[in-house]
Image (cartoon, rainbow, N blue to C red; front, side, top):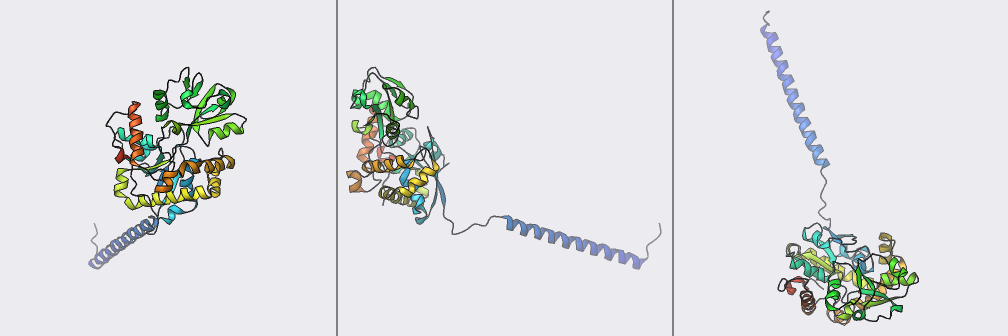
Length: 343
């Protein structure tokens, strides 16, 4: 092959070096561009953003959750440095499981469910209890002549199988001639059958039944001595230990929300109605009014809204043990709740 002259060879080498240098420069520029673009695509963390947590309810939004929604609607959670998303529940909502697995930070349940959970080594703890008197009732027809739960007999009684109260009633009373069937979740059968009774919340099913022309008579389960705290705010032992300031903020804001709801529930009720249109403003107003006596009893007036006592937890535990709902010595009632975060 023809030899390349030395000066031409040097020229070609210089050209190749320039091409290589340009390629290197282009590659470096391209990498720098990609890096800058990647940095721009990364979401920027706002150092002033409030921590966000979720609070799961045990039922659809109703008056029994009014204080938690009031804390959200009136900005009390944000005032205390936390943003709370409230998640509605429904029949057999797995609140304990969701809290225990850290799917949500906080939940709302009843005190008997806390005892159940701790008996199964699930470390959930009650933080505050709005309802000092449980709103659970047995709704009978006034025409039946039944005035006392102990006198219930010869009727069909609709009750859920899971809650402790239904097991306790069957353990404590003979319920002669009573046919126990699953709770239907509405009052349709009650209105059709004078020989039909069912569980309910004192400010919910009885109100609906009466508005539809029925003759409901509400018999509070609390009146027979079985009175678990209701709408209890819970978290895990780990959350309480690791996020103390967050827990305190949620508890304080929730207590303030319940005080607001009892004083002036209108704005909060509008919000609840928007989330659950089946709860009309009339029933929500009734629920808020009826809740006052159940929340602000003498104990709450003395010790503060949301307060709990060791005596009440011990009594509930003993009732559940007596009814063979949990084994003896399975639960330490003092560990089931804490009042350290209450204002």
